[in-house]
Structure formats: structure tokens, C-alpha cells
Length: 461
Image (cartoon, rainbow, N blue to C red; front, side):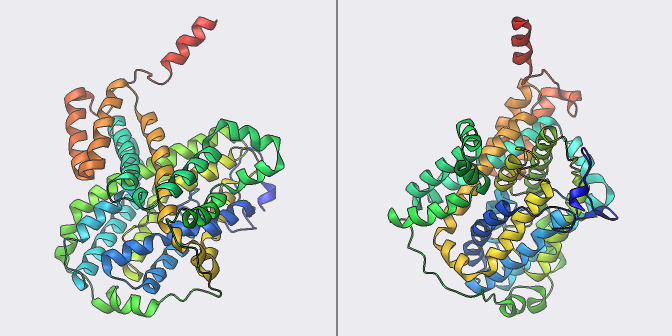
């Protein structure tokens, strides 16, 4: 059916209420370059394991079970009509860990995490089901939108370079890997190379995959990581211990008071999540402008229903400190950049995002791949954080509509990165009110990003 798509139409699908079911090989072409990338980029999914070991004291095999459950639910986005590569709510992770850490380790902490994730999930479903999610996106003033996304980018970069951050553990490997990754993904020069040689073209198609392989070698050469010890076979996740010691099936349901206590931090995390929704919309709009042959339907309400459902399910089956987010910005950019190259490069955006997530799930169950990337999990996480930071800053600035917006956004972003989302939201509301007064919601548009171009055009003419 995927071959029958006419120019300017959506990819074929089966309607399911608010969802649009698309199956691989039937409704979209399976994209092998994105699948191969996914095999190695499962390293980032696996990077959640140290976080869960640190916060909950989970054994490795139990945390692996949580990652696998999360991986299966990642597939729901493209299968149900959301054209994104989903991921964590990455910038909110420090906020969530700080909140949950205020509870004693053990049952109390598990209950706190369950209450937090379930509250976030149900809140997201409510916004999606009532249609309010789409209205929220258009309701928030541009200055605050811009600031939240900027802050998410700042927080992602800071988490890598702060004292005790991942850069101190892997300075050479991160520097080399990130430098090459940015060159391959964003460089104009490499874009020309891709069109001049089949070899460079293949490297470009593989995206971050060559960088992960490079990191596996560079880390040990610089003494920043051990050489991998390859094991064969399939993984052995410990679902029994997960469900008996870390879920409601074993430790019971959290008290009502824990849900009430979680509300302020849930709202703060949603502000950051909301920034990812805005990024999704902006990135897909960019792709839609370039690829006129495929109409891409991005619906904020549908996205809320899907990641809200993921969080709700995970809170019961395997509570996860990374949360279920609407976007993996780094990989969304990689997929979209290849999609922009034309129909021959990628037939459908659903094929690229879906094939990538099928690849990560394949990688998660294969011991050779898990053990190959295990020594560089911190490097893979740093790589995705820095790419996300780049994209967040770019998209965040473009959300501003005036010089005043940009000034307010810069302060909001800095406050979010240093004091957390609650403070950032309060500062943003106050500043926007002080600067715009009655024009709080509409703000102003001084064509900050188009004015200079228009003046230049007038001079030329």
C-alpha cells in the first residue's frame, strides 16, 4: 500500500478513532539505514540503567527489564500516527530525581515515583482527550514558549559539562565523537560530500551509527572506558524481581497524599515536556515545507494521548525515572535531515522514525550489542544531550517574535537551567506581564528574523 501514495497525500493508514494505524512493510517502506542506526543507538536507551540503579538501587537485570518495556512502548507513536522518534523527558530528569530522592530509599521512594509518573500520564491523557493539548500549545505566549525550549537546551548542555558531569569522565571521547557527529549531521561541507561520493553518502545515511562505533574504539584508546567484553545470546531481563519489588503488584498502591504531593513537580516537568511538543511541531513543520510529496499530520492531542498512555502503563509495569517523553530530539533531527534529501533517500517520515525504533528494540534484546556498547553508555547519553541542546536552542530562539520576546526567553531559559522549571515558569509569567501588560498573550511581532533579509532584498532590487 505504501507504494500507492499520491503526491501531496498522507501515507496510507487504518483509521482508529483519534489514531492512524500504520504497519511496517504495509503502510510504510521499511528504511534499513535507520534500522541499522537504531541497533547501536539502543546505547542511549540503556543509559537509563545507571540512573535507575542510582535512584532505586535496582540490579542491572531489573533495570534492563524496565528499558525493554519502555522500548516496546516507543513503537506506539509511529504505529498510531505520531510522526516522531519518541524518547525521554531528558531535561526534566534532574528535577525528577531530586524530587524522588527526598523520600527514603525503598518502598517509599518507589511509591513516590509511581505516583509521579501516573499523575503525569493521566494529566497528559486528560489534555489530549479533551482537546486542550492543542489549545495549550497556542495559548502560551511566544516569549515563554521560547524560554522553556531554550532552557531545556541549556539544561541538556550543562548536565554534560557541569562539575562531576560526563565530560569530566570522557573528555577526549566526547570531544571527538561530538565534533564528528555535528560535522556529519549539520555541516554544509559534509552535505556536499554526500552528493559527490557513494561512500560519503552511505556514512551520511547511517547518521550517528558510525559515531557510536568510533566511541567504542576511542574510549579505550584514551583510557576513558574499558574494551567491551562481548557476550553472545539474548538478554535475560528480570521481570520477576521488577514486579515483586518495584511495582504496585509487589509494594502496593501509593497513598492519595503522594499524588497530591507530586502535583507541583508534575506541573514543572510538564512545562519541560511541553517544550518537547513544541520542538516536535517545529521540526515536522520544517520537514513538511521541504517535502511536498508527503503530507505530515502532526496532532498535539494525539501525541498527548500516546505519551500519556505510555507514562500511565510504565508507572504500573515498570516505573522509570526518565519518564515517557514525546520526542528524542537528537534522533528526530537525524531522521528528518535524511527525509529532507528526498523520496529516494526516505520514502516516508513514518518509515524513518518507525524503522529506527524497530532497530533500537532489536538491539536491546541482543547480548552482543548490549555488551558492545555497555562501556560507552555515558558517552552515548552525552552525545544525545548535546545534539538536543543544539536543536533546542535553535528552535527556542525561532519561537520568539520580537527582541523583547528574545530577552525574556533568555532569562527564562537561564532560570530553568539553574533553578528548575517551577521558578522558570513563575519568572516567565512575571516578566511577560511586566513587559507586555494587557498584551500578555499576544505580545508583539517585530519580524526579528525576517527584517534584515527584507531590507537586503530591497537594496538588491
